[in-house]
Length: 183
Image (cartoon, rainbow, N blue to C red; front, side, top):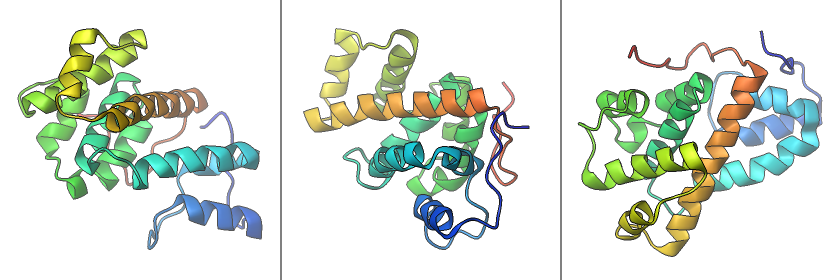
């Protein structure tokens, strides 16, 4: 049971419209619990939506790199809720295999290219220390320009924040979302 109760239908017209903006077109299930909880504070939700939507839909990182960063950030935060939403909704669409998405949780380096391993190592360093070593920064800079590097740091921090939020709220799993693989 979540610590903050998600809104349930019928929604006010304003909340219904706001929730529609959070969800991709054509989705047939209810808006995510996270979104319905956030709308207990609509002002906060609207401010959060701008950054979250921008990172998902208008980012400079490739969609696949974005999802690797999100999945690893969520896994390191122990946030099965958000990891499962992304593993189910985006992973296959961006070309990640089941082995790769599972490896974002298990830490198995096998399915990754050298560049992807560096990306995961950078997520891990940010998670552990809120900083990047010069060596990892330099390795990332071999593959990404400065705008992408900035986005990477913000994306990692944003999904750490989302993980902290979902975990602290004790959100129930979305019934259709994946769960962490057995380790």
